[in-house]
Length: 113
Length: 112
View (spheres, rainbow over the protein chains, first blue to last red):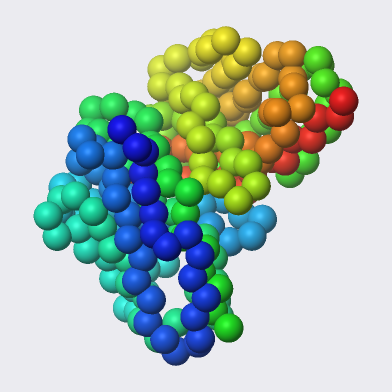
């Protein structure tokens, strides 16, 4: 068990570019979550998958954001036409249905210049 | 709407007890969590408590839940310099939701 893995750790992009982040959850975990954390704030929920089904989406997840979990294993979060306000740490977490603890990855820090 | 609030900063001396407080608004919260975040790192789950419990102890950590007042606290006994970090309280709503609502975090400073 290597924990939740997120790549890349850091991403710097120019405004207007598209970016994609990847999350590999703990292998036996069937639930996967994406959160966004800005400086000085707690994480904010973006979306949640159970297996490959996306069950919840936050209002924060605008049309420019899309998340997928095609085979119920790893997930990707894509941001199109990035804006400076998208600069944040993007955190992925996973859990096993029936157990209550959420395990977080180390995050991907996005900087939009 | 759903909200979780914490005080922003706490400073203690090494060896003292630390108490970090949290209030939440959603009375249907089923589970309440404490996470620790060190600089540049993700969140580490410390402990969680089910809403029908009023206390949970795990080594140096004691969680107290007052469901009537929607108040949660985390007590760290014999606080060490390695406990310096940001501590987040989080609440989970109904069992159908995957969403955790986090507070802003309390920065714990431990002075030698």
